[in-house]
Image (cartoon, rainbow, N blue to C red; front, side):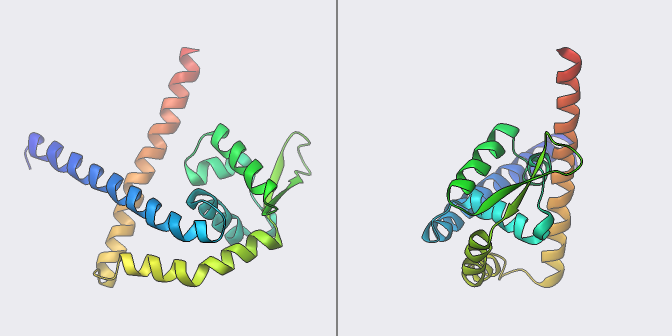
Length: 161
């Protein structure tokens, strides 16, 4: 494929991903709001539910969710205020803590699970298993590239400071 054609295809693919993400957020957000949370809070609670009682540090949450420290700080505070997460001191570093889902937070995730599963399955209903696997693999390649670019950007910012 010629360079100009590849650039056009790359732009189309990435803009399509943005549109998909926006629609997923809007429609998934409607489900989350019925449970009294946002789609970002749903994503955060779901991640914490999967990791269990060990929880995650704010830095680990940032990496997993691809958000800034400021965003995760606000997210933790809002979820704490709703009683859905709590902070557990990090035994080896008194300056740090782990964020753990509370029974209420886990209950919210369990409440969202049936509708959430149906919602997500509905979005990929027209894909067969190999297509779905290829989609997951392809999105992970792009995500890994973006994450590595973010790390490289932060390293360059540190050098420039």
